[in-house]
Length: 180
Image (cartoon, rainbow, N blue to C red; front, side, top):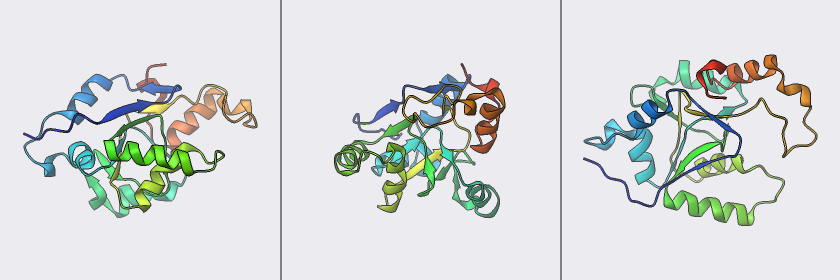
């Protein structure tokens, strides 16, 4: 079977929610495989210096149309993940290879402080590194709380309607599928 180097790490933001089936989903994602073709989402990505995004925010609805309707060939492992693009955001739950973690540190050292960290993933894609995102996220951002990072964000964006809207917008599924 395939084995990963011990130098991978999972990093989670301080405001994330996990899917109620996280333990089963995680086990399925990371289960040993016989070859790379059976595990593009996890092993192949990490062995090739990339990152696995356990959930994403994509603000462009046409990108989801592109992935799920027009370009089904970009879905891997029976539709479990897709290639991220420069439009794919979300740092709330990510598995980094050692190389990707080193690139993230360098990015943070050389990027203006007003540029959000989740823009790193698009830059990594532009450099040619594999960035794969789960189709059915197992970690999402907790959008029910008022932002402590963006003081200009309207607090009314955290109503039940807005939270439900964000789940639909980012293809996260029903809010009840995630632990509070």
